[in-house]
Length: 104
Ligand SMILES: Nc1ncnc2c1ncn2[C@@H]1O[C@H](COP(=O)(O)OP(=O)(O)OP(=O)(O)O)[C@@H](O)[C@H]1O
Image 1 (spheres, helix red, strand yellow):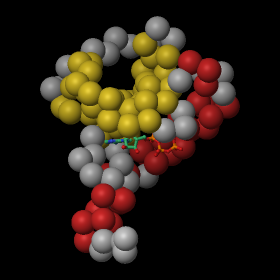
Image 2 (cartoon, rainbow, N blue to C red):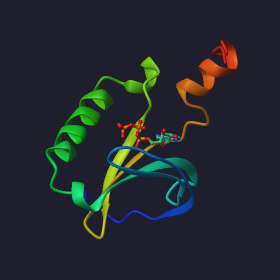
Image 3 (cartoon, rainbow, N blue to C red):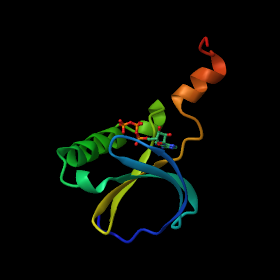
Image 4 (tube, rainbow, N blue to C red):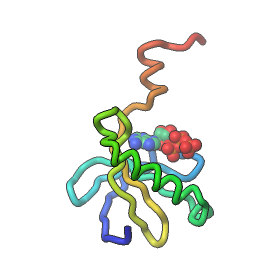
């Protein structure tokens, strides 16, 4: 996990319970990716290992075939865990709003 990874951050696209998500360019292949940067205080949280274990299991199940967001790799930047995913242009909520608008 400590291998050298160069990414260019373009924008912060969201924030969840465990950290911020940024739209980035993975310099190794020039792909646009989403990188979830885990918050400082969560570095020792058991979540970190549980999340990694779950992502590894999903990857082993060929997640791309089943329309599960693809996880590419994990790396650390100055000791901070970063999770690299395929970049999704729309969330499920965006799609629901597009195809079946909620009342109000
Ligand atoms: N793969 C992705 N591609 C594009 N945007 C993303 C991606 N993953 C997350 N985001 C954006 O970042 C936001 C936060 O995502 P994140 O996964 O950190 O938390 P969450 O899904 O809101 O829930 P939680 O942190 O509680 O699990 C999302 O609402 C979305 O806008």
